[in-house]
Structures are given as structure tokens and as C-alpha cells.
Length: 585
Image (cartoon, rainbow, N blue to C red; front, side, top):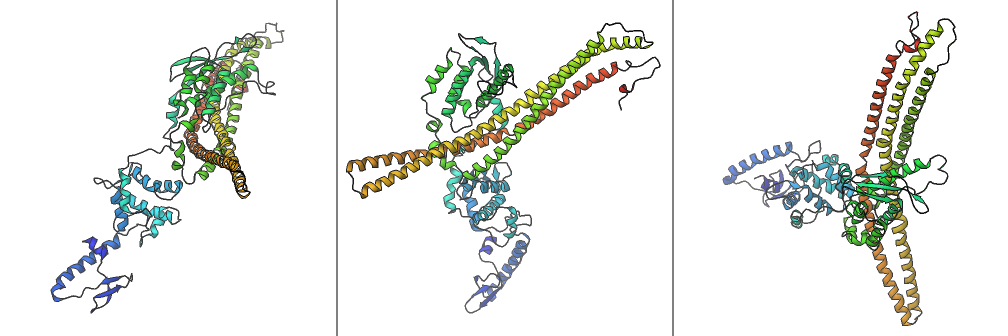
């Protein structure tokens, strides 16, 4: 009943009774005029009542409420046909994956698609019919160049905007397509990454070669449950091959092999070796937890090969292996998965990550200073206790100067016993310093190593792929000019054919470079996701810092309270008066 009324509603008509037609006063649309006859008065009266009911219902159930929520009261036929085309026969809801495929058919940017999805997706994997109608309106508004905001829906009471999605019958294939994950998107969490593997790098006793002494490390993988021995030169070869294979990924840098010039004055050789050990551990953990490196045979070989010459093994097995572009099945199709605004996305991500890197550098500097102060505090407390012990151990005779002799004798004996409390305080302070260094500073170092590798990757993209692409285009342009010149001057056929062959080769090279450029952007987009997946480590770092401070202050507070109790009667003289220092307020 209502469908027929939607198509041809009973309305006030200005009509010529003879012609049986007229025009709607409100809309100006020509409509059929029904001329009452005695036999149809009862029918007309019934239709009139139905029309009154319909108008009252439509007045109450407008298409959009003031909050911008869509009602199913009155929607265009196109909306209903699109919904029918992509929804299931047994469920009027629309799968979110099918909706994403529908969005991908539009010319909207990835950012606009994400905004529309955020407004309608409730997180259960489906869109209700009302939410889907709302999404269609937002798509139409975005295609008109407007910001897809629910507030705009308030102005759509009289007219629903029509999205440009093509014929509804052509959309039926969207619901029939198998669900395929977008290879550009990484489904990762920080917990997933950290659980991939934990690598421990320990320094083993120094070994001497025939001419030079060298340092070896014991590398233990929790994932492979094996320990192997590696020298720094082994790490060097591994890093070289890893960078050769994954030039479009965030390959962390190795710590320096030797003490940098001018650093030795402020850092001892022992401290440098310890810092290098920590750096190698961070490098391996980042590599072993990377979503792509972790599954590569190159990484497995380095972590598990127990032969005598791992360098030869690595070179023989992987030196001639092609880079990721040659082996990835998405390499030549990367452009198809990239969003239209990939360049702006890359620029925005790069700028944000650069700012994050700068802030984390400052956080690390402060954390290092606090950890160093804890260690210095431990040293000062220990020395303070030793001086008290030395003072109390002094057996020099005390001259008889009245009552002071007996007082100093008792006091000196007590001071010797207090040195153990300061030794305990020093231990607690040193422990806090080590805790801050291991749980706070080291995690900051780890994240900064990852951020720095992302910055290095961006530079490789611009100075490597883009630069080589521009050089190839320039070379191609020169060849084309030479070809035109040779044709005009009617040079020998052989030289012209050679030039044509070179041009074809250059065109192929340019095509390959363009594919590599798109694949580089593809990888950059994924590596940007990896950086943001690691960002929640910030809360882990802050939690470790706060816990360390709480634990340190609690433990040291207990020792200070014990010390305060021991001092309670130390400075009480014969007159029974306590000295001011033992009366804190």
C-alpha cells in the first residue's frame, strides 16, 4: 500500500477536470487527476483516509533526525536496490568486508574512506540497514567534495544525495567475492611482535688470535632454543646481506665496531664493549621480531648455524639470492594496492615519526642522566659509610677534657656500626640505577634504533629509487632526441637500429624502476604501520620508570627508617636532651 503511495501520492491538484491531469502545488510535478464518480466515492474516501495516515506518519518519521541518524521511513529506490544487491538473502545486514569493497569502487581517498567507515562501523563486522543507508549518503556527500560528516545529514531531510556507484546489478559480485586480506595492511599488535622471539647476547671471556685479540658473543634464541657463538665480523656480513635483500625495509644499523675518535676520553674500553653488546642485542631483537625478516631463512641461519665459518655459509647461501622485489608476489602489483594519496600519507607519516624521534631522543638523554645519578648516589652513599666506618675505627686515645671523653667514645663506637646501613643504601641505589638502565633506558634505545632505521629507509627511498628513476628518465630523453636527430639527418640504418634497440632497453629499465618505486612505497607504507605498532611501548617504558622509582624509594625508605631508629639515642647526652638533627618535622 505504502509503496504505491510513494510512487503516486494523493495530493492537492490544480487540474482541468476534462483533461484529468494537474500539477502538484508543492513540487510542480505533473500527476494524474482522479475525477470522482458516484461509484467510486467510497473508494476515494478510503484512499483519502490512507493518505491522511501516510502524511501524518511521514511528518513524524522524517528521513533524518536532528542528531543525523537515518530512519528507514523514506529512502530512494537506488539506496534500496544497492542494499539488496550486496546484502545477504538471509540477513539484511551488510558485511563490513563487502562494504570496504564497495568503498574501493569509488574515487574517494583512503582518508575519506576511513572517515566514512568510522561514522558507521560499530565494530561487530556488519552494518545494519540504517547504517548502510547512512554510509551511502556520506559517500555521495564526499563525492560532491564535501567533508563526510554526520552533521551534513541533518540538511538532507528533503533530498537524499545519490552516490556514484554504478548499476546495482553490477554490485552483486561484491558479496560473492571471497574475502581477501589487503596485503598492504599489517594485522599486528605489539604483543604479537614481542612474542616472536627474544634474543639474548652475552659477552664471553676474551679470546686471543694469532696477532689480534677479539671478542666473541653468545647468541641465544628463545624461539629456536639454541645458542651459537658469533664475532662482530659475523654480524657485519649478516647485516650486509640483510640490507641487500631488504633495501625497502627498516633494517636497523649495527653499533660501531670500534671506539669513535674523541669518545675514548669519556668512555672506557670496557664500557664501550658493554655498550656494543647491548647494541647487538637490540639489533637482533628488532630483526627477529620483524614481520618479514623473522620468516626469512637468512635470519634463521644466522641464529642457528653452529658450524665453524658462518660468514662463508651466509655468503654461499644468500649472496646470489635476489632482493625482495624479485621474490615478493605483490611486487609488480604494488601500485594496485596503494591508496591514491600515498605520497601525502608518506609525507605525513615521515614528519610525525621525525617529531617522535626527536622527542624520544630527549627522553633517553634525561633517563640516562637519572640512571647515572642513581649510580653516582650509590657511590656517594658507599663512600659516606666508609668514612663513618673509618671515623669509628679510629683507636687514637682521646685526651681527658671533662665529660666529652666518655661521650666521644660511645659515639665513635656507634658510628662504626652505622656504616653497614649506608652500605645497604648504596646497594639499593645501585640496584635502582641498573633497573632504570635495563628497563627504561634500554627500551628507549630499542625504539630509537627502530625510528632511526625508518629515517634511513626514507633516505634510501629518495636518494636511491627516486634518484635512479630520474636519471633513467633523463637518459631516455637524451636517447629520444638522438633518435629524432638521426632520423632527420638520415644516418646509416645500422646506427639508427642500434639506437632504437638502446631506447627499447631504456624503456624496459624505466618500467622496472617505476615498478620498484611503487614497491618501495608499498614497503614504506607497511614499515610506517610497524612503527605505529611499536608506539604503545611508550606505556611500557613509563610503567617501568614509575615502578622503578616506587620500588627504589620504598626500599631505601625502609633502610632510612631503620637508620633513623638506630640514631634515636645516639646523640642523647647525660642531660637527656636530644639533638635537633634527630627531630625532623
